[in-house]
Image 1 (cartoon, one colour):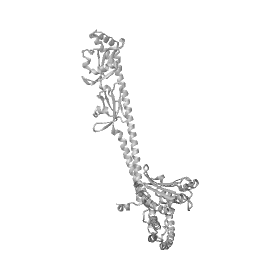
Image 2 (image 1 turned 90 degrees about the vertical axis):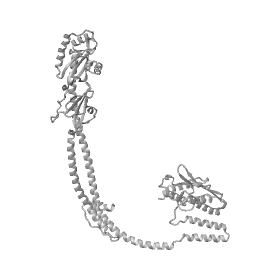
Image 3 (image 1 turned 120 degrees about the vertical axis):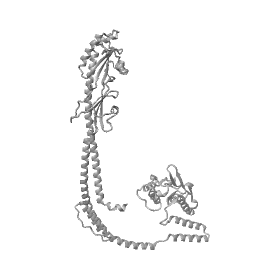
Image 4 (image 1 turned 180 degrees about the horizontal axis):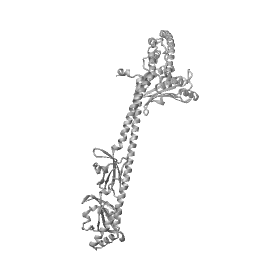
Length: 589
């Protein structure tokens, strides 16, 4: 796959594709942002217009309701009607002439509103005194509307459609007797034509009318000028958009506090998105033109950048080691010219270095030949020591023979071949330390006592070779040999369960280290002034500390990868360090 696409992975193609992708992303983001902002603005403006229409229509509706409210209020407060209803409440029935006189009162008030179909007046026991057909109010209206009128205490209550004529709306109002402390005196019912509430005078700038639907408190359509059928309950439940199966409408609702009716202004959704469609087309056409222009410009720009680079690359491919030729090229781009100049300087320098390297290789070959001739095989030393051992064994020099064989094994442990692993187990390291102490025991005799403590679980823990022996050697030289009295050396290896580390501690009861000398050693361990080599300088401690830093300084061991020295003049010396209980593979990389 990679070989097949390699011809297309040129710098020019990458620059070209990169520019095109950036342009497409920029155009896409800009187009989406502009489209979203403008579409939101158009929709917001449409909703504001519809909201304004709804507010205006709601104001006209409230004005119509106020007229009806004023009419019924004047009828209910009429002096003649008030006196007649009071007499009815006292048990004195109204005569035919008294009831006939109500026709003139109702007609005079009714003439002020064109939509008032008729007016009905009832007593407190629901008997109708006008018109004169003795029909009961409980048969005229549902009992619930009468209860609401009683609770309203004179407030006009709209009771929905007239059961006898669906084109008529009924409104009921309780009559309070003004001269009798607002006692309940009866009811007035007004019959209003639905056409009275037809709000069809709201025209737009193009001459068309807004679609308005008026719903009562029960969700029944009071009046509507829509050409299509919409479910009234769907209009009531909708938040912003309602559908009739073919077309969607934006709906804005206003609720009348006087009647509890809901005024809904509906506008087809397509009318608000006409401008968005034009905007979408304009953005698409602009994007296509921009992409085409950017493709042409990107192609010429990428060619102008990559053509000098291709020439330079050909010159580099044709270069031969030791005989490289400069690229004689002039470009209109300063960066390309500078790159070509740098290449030519590299060519001159490469030719010079090639000759120098050839001379050095000749000299190195001669030096390696001399080094090979002067090498000594470590096995010669081991074989010689083995010969000394058998010679001393034959002569009965057992103590000297043990010393020779111990030295042989000591040298074999120290002198490693280049392919031998530098990591050993703690048991191997302590076995080497024990051989060293045995040799020192032969020389110092009873002046030195030593002890090694190692638990079985730590025997196989890996560690770098020759970290403990230099510390033990330091304890022998400065802890035992520096005093005439017997000395003791302790090597303790124990785990730290909390941190998952192993502590290696070398302790002696020698004369210790003076405070000034101890500060010098600690300063050298921290990377201060190096110690001068020689007996008693502590160079071995610095060497062990540096090896700990090399092996474990960048590992999770962190600050524990160091050598700690605690000593006091006349109180001995304790040197300790820490190693992890994991494999060396985690650290020697």
